[in-house]
Length: 427
Ligand code: PLP
Image (cartoon, rainbow, N blue to C red; front, top):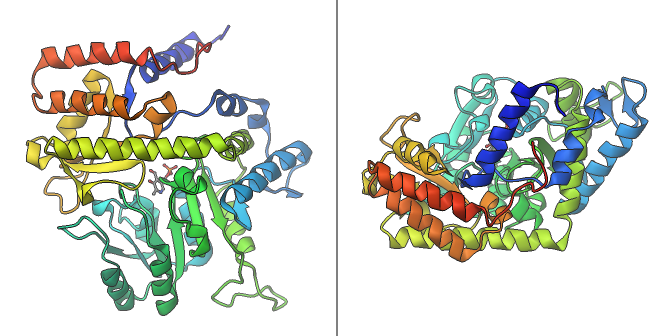
């Protein structure tokens, strides 16, 4: 029995919302019960500044084992030589890498936020855009794809110290090898932020950035299906490329530069309860069933993208290689904001999203982003995804029809009873 009825009633209300609706937000997923159980534990009580075996607090023997297990599992999952599991979020993982490897005012080159990039890659409203000098590459208007020759030309022009590849709304795989050639040519470090496709990369279903990029960051809560959080990895550790040395003159390893970037650079005490949940999720992702999950995620996304195209929607780049698609709604005379607000009333959650060369503000937008990571965890297969596209199209084609919205919501609530979520749990 919980003593704080007010809070737990609200948590229960959110559980019911998640159970009865169709979750298409590309950055969301449903963790296992074991991940949730690990988070709600006494580990939250423990201070553990530092790293396993080298802490600033006593009593860290058990959390040392937990954090080391998370590191070892993550290294195994991605074939990494180095991993840091402490970043509280994806944005903080990126900030820690920037802090560790750059000086204020250094030029950086990232994917344009307005074309699908993430604000932690140099947006003027974010730390990364305020402290460093951001430059951007984008997609082509016709194809919706990144033109690598243009990335190379931009890099030659702006001479970045760090190039970031990775995005929040890019449906295609990344040419990490070509990015590395460009980075080497201009003497930049290459960072891949794989927050979105991490689970698909772990399953071996997309190209492996750890082979090509100096540093890789990610969130743990999207396709990787863990608790909310961030991670940093390196395929191979190396010496700091800008010749920094210890006081005694010996070269500094990038692993220690990155560890200091996270703690004490960016954070204080790590969230060991979340790190335990990360370890659980990495253990799950190491199972063969996780690859099968990833394959279904991609199949579902490709079937949905094709169905949208057949119904006359403009899917940017014409389809998808991963778990998401970005849809330009201008051909349907609907804004992203109107689509998001109307669909949610039918218990379908998507997010409005800027599309490349958008004519609307970020609060309105011309597009929506749709992802299949969460519905695939619920058990959706291709035929369910076609049904979802039918429902979305029925609503967006007749956006003011209250009766239709009401009917679709009832149908969806009934449909979702076939896909149980957190059974036997009341909050
Ligand atoms: N990087 C990318 C590419 C993202 O899409 C996101 C979140 O959507 C982040 C970083 C930030 O993650 P967080 O919200 O955990 O800070």
